[in-house]
Length: 310
Ligand SMILES: Nc1ncnc2c1ncn2[C@@H]1O[C@H](COP(=O)(O)OP(=O)(O)OP(=O)(O)O)[C@@H](O)[C@H]1O
Image (cartoon, rainbow, N blue to C red):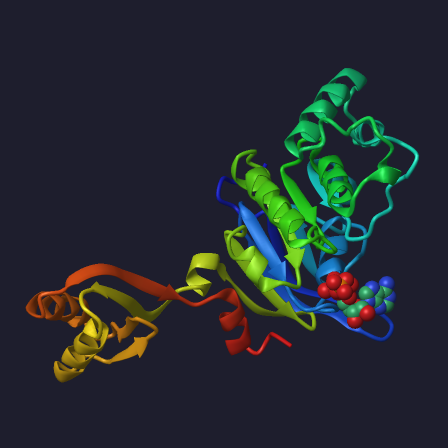
């Protein structure tokens, strides 16, 4: 059993060489428990990494450990405690979600009665309770993605690997799927590794983000560290027309960097006095301070800064 707080996945110099392409190139990363997003453009190596982690593809060099088990030697043991949602859809059209997920539960070793119970539970969790007896062939893309997610968690895994689960979904279904992923990771206590080529969507779902590009590690950190403050706040004041300009000018007069931003004032806070000066200036001018809002980087901005986005 891995120690509490131990990484769920560790790779060291992990390399996968296909005949023409090096899909993973000396990738060394620790993935902690919780929800982790693996982000990279198409072809970055995300699906290859997942295949290695499941023990389905042997590394050319280096090693990968999942829940402290070596993927080269413990593939079957890993797959018993890890769920997998593949990117592409290979669902049988003629069977119902209930039949399919029950079958997958039994394949993963659950006795029939437990498998039935778990199937009913997970189909309810993913929001397919009502439609579960209809043939999958008539399902929408969003429903099919939820069937794939249900079969990935039906055996109550410790870790689940989701390959591009939001692919092909409209914005609303994508939000539903992201909420579901967050619940699996945060309420059900199953660690989640989720791949995506869209950084923005992982911002509110993932606790950690691993950015890969051409099989190499660009960045691995807590989402909150990546989206750290820009050193700028937006200040909103209450007063007659032009109050924001007067505040901005008063701040500049006192040596604080400030610039208009719509009807608010963008203020640099590198100077430790800055927030005190804002409060003093607003009071001196007889105005009200409505809001001081810290501005954070978005993941997209960070990715662009590291040269990963295309
Ligand atoms: N079986 C294979 N044989 C040869 N090359 C492969 C194979 N699978 C993937 N590749 C190549 O390896 C690189 C990484 O592919 P991979 O599928 O891991 O990337 P990805 O980040 O998951 O992208 P996508 O989201 O498009 O699947 C790509 O250049 C791809 O063309």
